[in-house]
Image (cartoon, rainbow, N blue to C red):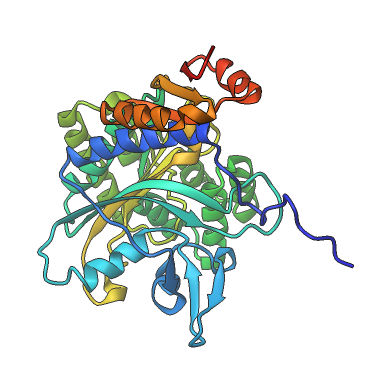
Length: 388
């Protein structure tokens, strides 16, 4: 006989208890206020989407999607991310709204896990999408807004790593003929496995010039000076154009006054293969995984019939919750009215009056157990009706 599930939850799912949820809601409110100041409007999309539309366009690997069949036999998925659903909305319900369009979301997404590895299958994101603006100023806006969000959330120390996928791709196309080998190099960079990358370089060629170029990309991390250094080291046209874009971006970020939080990383190519230009990731001190990630994706909207350039980012709320921020919970004092049976009407009327005065009120019959429970709370004021 199969043992029934009593307390277990599906793999990767979790409960969020009130004390933690209060912090999450506070941070969501702070981020919502911050993003609103930049002219973005909030959007909500369904938790379920058709696989043939949103699922096929999503950047998430199919094996990580929760798939179901509806009553009509169509394959539907629990949304694994929000960018593709928003692209669907912009191309349909918003087809007559002129570009640029600024939208943001705060929602849960679902990605199936193959085994227990400490990863959540349901997690929360706050993200923004700037659609219909191909300029480098739009990239700068997305990065500056991401920095503003981290400031407002109280993250004490962080850096935004910025790159451009064509810097790496131009270099690899110049030095590596085989597409399969280029994909291997990209995987190592995706995973920040620089040891594996170096080893693959040495296994691939003994040409000293090619080796120098392929290894040079790993040294191109730092401030404004890395732009000039990159121009000297990488000379193919594709990479040079990308470097020029980064230089223009840096100028815009200087105008925003945020470059102290920016690190140029010319071996950054983003974690999703739909990026087409500037990419960036945000890291906080003592957090091994990116706190946020984003970049330019100019080809996605075309899949929904309304081509447009776009950029944006998603902030991982679950990771933000683990960072010691400036958040300090302020609990409103609650009034607890305990009453004997004959005082019930008086107690409930008093409670209603207090609530009209915007006070938090809990009521209940007066027993030894209830009095003991509420007397132990440091944010409660006890009122006893029927005390002799």
